[in-house]
Image (cartoon, rainbow, N blue to C red; front, side, top):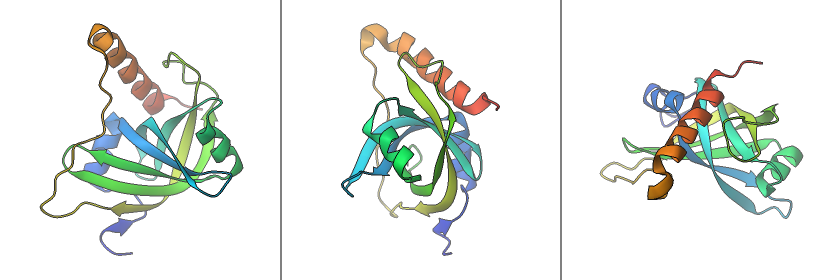
Length: 152
């Protein structure tokens, strides 16, 4: 593998993902076309990422049919990565979420650095409504904590 493609998370990305951040979940639709969903992710090791998939969603149906998926990371520090892997269900419900979201795990096969020298991107981030900002930020942090700390 080239230095820009590895089979585990590089240190800077691992440090970020152990705290948690939003990402795009990419799955293969039944029609063969890609499907994208916005989700929360946390690295639990250099080779495993946990994330959420909304119960009843197209993404969850896609993952139940085809376990290969990718996560697109666009984060602070100009961290732009595509992570490919095999997905499995870890827990039927993330309790900290205010809606039914299933906890999934992605066992990493490939991590590709997609950054460009001299180019900076704006990270993916949820922007909560002002009147609920504190409440939603607390919920988001609770989801990250549950993804990080849950043990089978």
